[in-house]
Image (cartoon, rainbow, N blue to C red; front, side, top):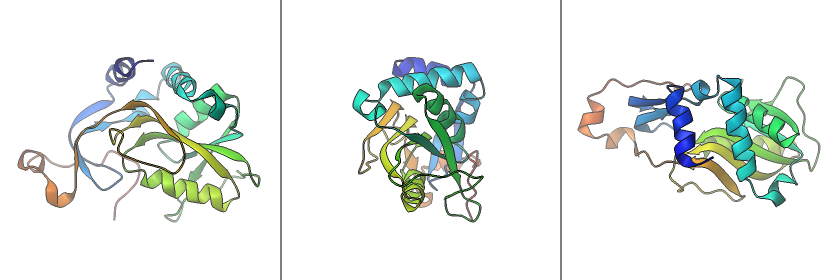
Length: 194
């Protein structure tokens, strides 16, 4: 699937939004990708997951024992990636602010994990989820996401692959351009900021 085809899927689902958005990372942007909306259609979610799984190097695909995703945003694409890779898919969640395994999910010592996200902007959530997986005894062998919102700037110590890389500008609170600051801010993500 080409980058244009991926963005067409987002547009068709009404998932490419414009306005003033406070991202989960704490940064502001004039653009927001509402992955929950693009993934609400099971056929579309499956197509995107198959495309993402196909984009992973064969040697990485063959080493994956389980898919883990951070809740909320990564759950659907993580589940579909598990289906595409024919492995179990579980998720970590933050009931008290720190990612942890719940719901009877477990990771066996040394189990090779693919971390699957919907969107990566700074990599903070991914790093926090990786810590939870490693704390449970797993070994994260790769990370993937539908969208790399950093435009290729985010770096991890393990292989990272995204279906599409975008570089919509993001801003700290004190860096907002006047035209963006004039637009009321929306917080469309699932993670609450204090």
